[in-house]
Length: 276
Image 1 (cartoon, rainbow, N blue to C red):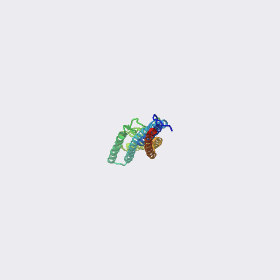
Image 2: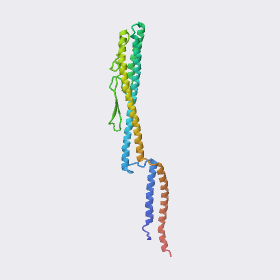
Image 3: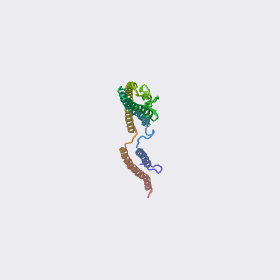
Image 4: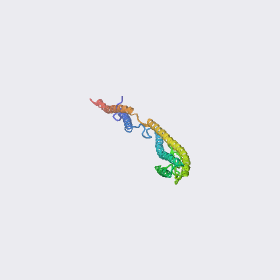
């Protein structure tokens, strides 16, 4: 064994090991503090890059969910309005059929016509108020729902506009139509029959659109959950494992400090060589 007062190899070795332990301990503490085993590219560039791409997809899916939810709300408002109009058309047909009775007296026909007119005007009110977030799917405009369905906005789901205004193709009842005479009432019965059939077709389209939006939204939520779990599997720290590592490294650090202390005392043994 060589003795030197210029170099303490044992102390240097002990210090090197202590520094490595301290570095590992710092890394483990960071994992525990952040909950991440890969918090930046320097931890693992490849895995961090994959995780960042998945995070980007997740952000995109959040936007998709918002678009689908907004679209579904708009369609549901239109669907509720269309259902209300359908009920009005049925009531109007009842009034028109009653007024088409040739034996009906004038007073009764007048009362029925007044009820018919009130119901007719309600259709216009419902159509005008059937908007959500500035979009109305059943007025005489051209609004349509075009919701994005994937994280890069290259795919969409469309719910078309349906005009349910008075005088439209779907609702061929004019804004002045009445049942004040037997002839007018008979004509209204025919028109209302067409309107009811047309509206049933519109209800089917809107209902299908709402269902498609809801199903896509549900799938998007599940996909987002899967991606979130996938990101966690890539970058999240195993807290039980990190806790065990922390305790082991703390003990190792304490032992390293003691080893360094002992190594630092070794050169003092040289003094014994010079004692008489």
